[in-house]
Image (tube, rainbow, N blue to C red; front, side):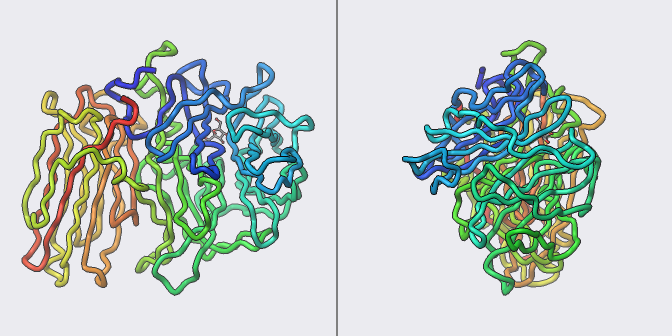
Length: 501
Ligand code: FRU
């Protein structure tokens, strides 16, 4: 693939060519190598006959493309989404003399039904052997063509494998257990929670550490991706927090919480193998089924571009937020590890603007932070923080910002002219809440050629948006205004290393 195309992200994963959607099978091995598999149609720039593409990384930003890991069998087969685990204790019996055996658990889609299959790898996840007695779970119920996306974790309390899987049009998440990844028992269903849209897809169940609170050391999150029918159209992911006893997930409350306030964050998956007392990490598909097959990152011919990227890796923990209660925090994981150089820094900006030309940054990717501190009085809350990335040639721009007084945060991709589509929503917003105890307000973001991700207060709210200008964006303005004398702003802007050039 051509990695220097104007739309090709440089600090985000995208496939060499062809079409990519959901992240699959993600795990970190004992040597610290991260494995990403992904829904992949290598034969066209649109979704089609799905394979499991594969890439590896040491840092989750710099990726090595690997050969396709799992191919479909017959001509009507698609290898759909699923997960992978490291079977250290050889529960499956596939790995008599090794501790690094990998088992992939995925859906085989054929016109007649969707069934769950496994494949095992003796070489640490590079090549897989399909299990001879597949499928390991056949559909029950009345909708055999709608049963997919198994995500498996190891449950310490019961010393068994636990799977969550979607019955998409029944609006149910099935919870199964297994001693060996081969024989699975249905334990319970988590049904009709939250926004249903028209389908539930790609569930995750994960234990996540809780930070600074009297709640508990950790909680379980149940994440459900819904498509079509997200409130903003198409695809989005919602989550529920609660507890898990090895067979049942109990939601703490019935509040619907979303992982993102824009439209390009779907089907995220948690890495298997990160210790449960550490922040958990996801990659998420940065696109939306409403327009993913027509975005201008690819032409008609295979090899002319690519379609879709993943978000940057996101770190996650749970924080108890005033008013909202426990919430899933989503921040750019280890972003400072890929900084190439500092473009601007000002520790006492107060009210003012940082203006910079980043046309000489090879990646075209930058990270910025604006931290306001000393918000002690109510007048000091009148401030605003905002940013614009624009093209010095065409004037096209991406902008966003936040009003401290009411907590509103916004993102506008409407002033870019490279793509038009009725579902390509222009503007997004959400509302956070100022916390008096720490007197601070923060906005940060990553822009990378055709994708932007922004984070309010370290990830209490976040948004992921793709955008398509006709000319590369090369100029940044970061503005702070309306602060009174008790508050100060410190801002920084950094060039990010091009991982693909
Ligand atoms: C979600 C999804 C999954 C399915 C896969 C097929 O984006 O529809 O439910 O397994 O994509 O590519």
